[in-house]
Length: 171
Image 1: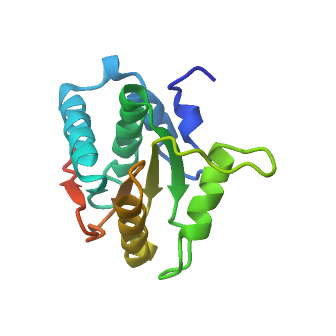
Image 2 (image 1 turned 45 degrees about the vertical axis):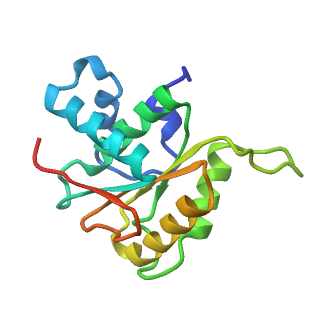
């Protein structure tokens, strides 16, 4: 896959009806001006705060916007991106194993080698069933490392310390 391609951000088994829409967002030149401004604003908020949430009602387009932000951060800042779909987890359950699995899937390491300290963006999608665990996780990762950013999508803010929140309006 060419550097910056959408497919490199999507983990195997991602179940979303918006993949065609996400692919359209991959070509920034074709995006509407309102979307470009939203992505720029979200990117700056996330870089400033370390963690952020794109929130809004179901089906409004939170995931495509978050993927567009992730693609921009990967291109502009060199961040590695791991996409984690939390929508299938048990409500109220832990998320650490799902995140670590997504990281391993995104960057397989030879046996005996650990992950590098390269900057990373963890895109936590569909946080609703595990919003409290996602907030604790985001705080722990952002405030204990200098190299991790967390971007979440949810119908409600995570209410994590230092979280930047953007309420997505219809495009």
